[in-house]
Length: 364
Length: 267
Image 1 (cartoon, chains in turn cyan, yellow):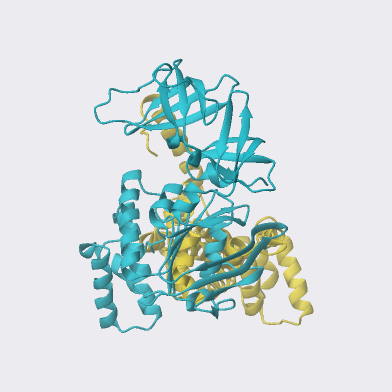
Image 2 (image 1 turned 30 degrees about the vertical axis):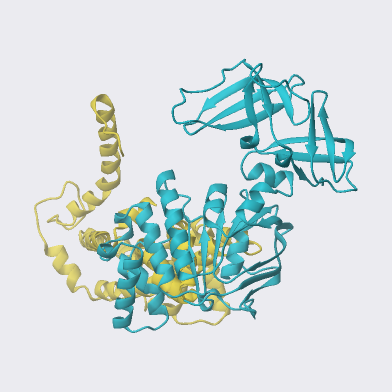
């Protein structure tokens, strides 16, 4: 299957007076999987449906391999699409569902039958051809839908929350499977999801959207480690966010004063900044019992009281309260022989972390 | 119903249901009963048993002629109201355009307007337009009266169809017409059939509109029945009615077998 490059050029979609998608430009490299990630109503589904041709943009264009798709009707665009509720035709058997797209392309019965068989093989449901969709589980239905989308050898694959209706365990294994298949076929893929784990697991590139606009575009690592906004820092994973004035510059970095008992040393800071916001990931923070560690130094460390402690299997979550009332979230990986939580609610602890963990977010 | 009724609740439920059934069916049963009465006037309880009124009715040229006209008219009406109603329903459910709610209200309005008024209005318009053919006028009138039934049942079943099915078909290469034909229509078949049955039945026994649009040459069954009723009220009138009742029953049962009418009406 040849890979296509998909390019969105200043896409806008307005409904009456509300702007669903606001000036979105994006290039999706051939063979890549891109996830449009954001809360509901952020415009990610509208974007996807404009790529499919199911929604006409108010302005802007979609290009596939530099060919303008605006004005090309859906049924001529050759896109494979998966829907959250699978959208299998209930009155047709599995085989007939998969053959539908082939029939629309005027492919001969014999060729179609062969291709349907191959598609069923590909999604590992060879023996299910004669069944009706209602006789299949959700996971099986989505596999059939995938087979139906792939059998037409689409220019790209569009996934609209494809695994949203499945149980957690099945969803996770399908994520890995779908990703492996997509890589193997080298098929350019755009996925819409509100599930950050899904985006992190599957996508080469994550596009975080908010209020119809692109908030941040980058690889999983970039988005997670270097969020450019408070929104991204909070939407992808958990973050401890602090803000405060610059207390003292030192070289290219500075000391940020968050509260009387806590300052943060950041290594890089824009020259123009006077107030900054800093995000610290919960897993970057180390907790130690008071007395077992050097006393809190005020810089990148603080004495706090355990407010809540939650045991979650391979990780424990601690919610700490600082004397001035600030909250710090800490994720600590549990050791295999560890007996439950290491710190009890009410215990005095010292939280500390390294300067590189202080990630400065541009103030808006 | 998931829970089974039992005890006193069941007793109440069955009593009320029974009373309703009786209330609806009793007049029909009465008509059937008197149609076999061996008397020259309609009397109840029927006296004796005879099928001579059926023999008489089935040889009555006026009645047979009216039956033929009514059946053809009802078939034409069914076709016409489906041709008009299904696309209209599709536009109402899937469309997004200015004044949608107003148009919806308007298209369903003959269910609210008195049929007598609709009939009179139609007569005036058709006369103004110079339409002289009673059969054509009846067809137009009946399509106007029955389309709302089709629109209503089709709208109901269309609302239950997942729009993603249509989107999926289109991404797979089907244009809008093929999508409708191959994907949407099979989902709404029971609704379309129910609407068609309604159209047929409503056309077949429509009196108030028919009365304005028919003439002496082309009189559908309801008019012939009424005329007969006024002239000689002998058991041939109940016999005609019974034939119509049986026809309706056969129609309903047939459709139930074919497309599961119960499901469509329940929706």
